[in-house]
Amino acid sequence: MKGRKPIPSRLHELRGDPGKRHRNRDGEPHPDVLGKTPPAPAHLNDRARAVWDRTVPELTRMRIISKIDSSSLAAYCSAVATYEEADERLKTEPWTTTTARGGSRPNPLFKIRDDALKLVNKFAAEFGLTPSNRARIRIVGSPKQSAFDRFLDLDEEDEPAADGAANQGGVGDQSPERLN
Image 1 (cartoon, one colour):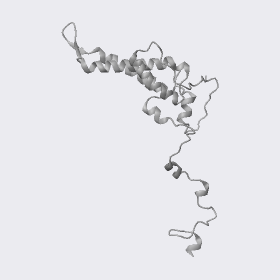
Image 2: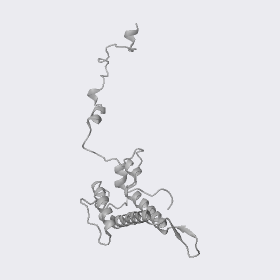
Image 3: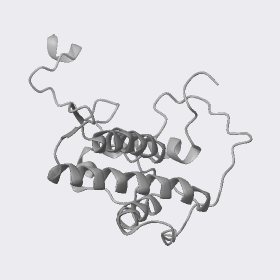
Image 4: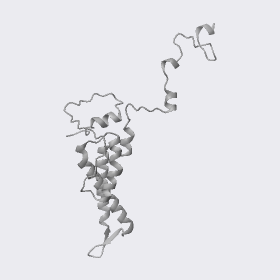
């Protein structure tokens, strides 16, 4: 299929729709959103479980994930764990290795780290975990508003009266009565 990948409705709602484009949501599955953080799958190693513990609660709080996303989230956590481990080992191991013929080549950990990073970026984009994706997300109906936001919001009662009663002929007033 050509073109952009479709965005799930929940991410679309969080990001907002500045173009007010019509979205055909017919036939799109709507799995139940998780209300609490699910436990990490048993097959994850300790490092991947730590990634799960720091990532999944935030996604649950944002109401983005459902139960069927657990496999993709586990794959994301494993990829992050692989990246972290390879990167950590590269700090202590030499960056080049000797070949059988006596030449040198880059340490295979570079490829392992880079491949894991590609996977991490793919999964992160799917779940809205990259900074650019997070910047596009707007929480709709946020109940808290800062004092500055309230100051900037003008109600109809704060606007000048339409009949001109608020205009007292100050500096720069160009009304016809003042010009005569």
